Amino acid sequence: MTAVTVRIVVRATPREEDQEKFEEAYRQVTETVRGTPGHLHDELLRDAEDGRTYILLAEWESEQAFRAWENDPRHLQMAAPMLPYWGDEGVERRIYEVRARLDSV
Image (cartoon, rainbow, N blue to C red):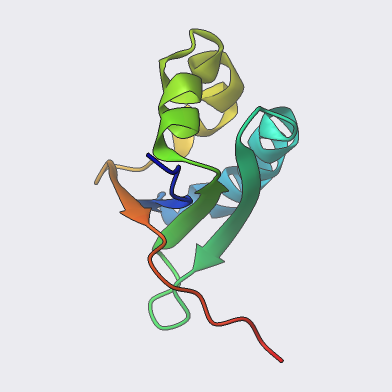
């Protein structure tokens, strides 16, 4: 079975007063995760219409690589800077398989 690249999409709504801290914590976590086997790319997106909702978008070589990191005890240590800022609504996480890709020409 061939490994399929996956995107991890995490939706979070930090409290308004925590948005700057949330973004800084994201940068810290991203630096820590950089170089993790199977991890390819991260992005932090903020909803342009409401300004409150964020999407963390991570690209991994495979779901297996992501799950290995997720199940590693160091995962919580790496993610710790963001935990206080997830907001009252919590987070929603989904895993999507990349089925097709159109690269710009």
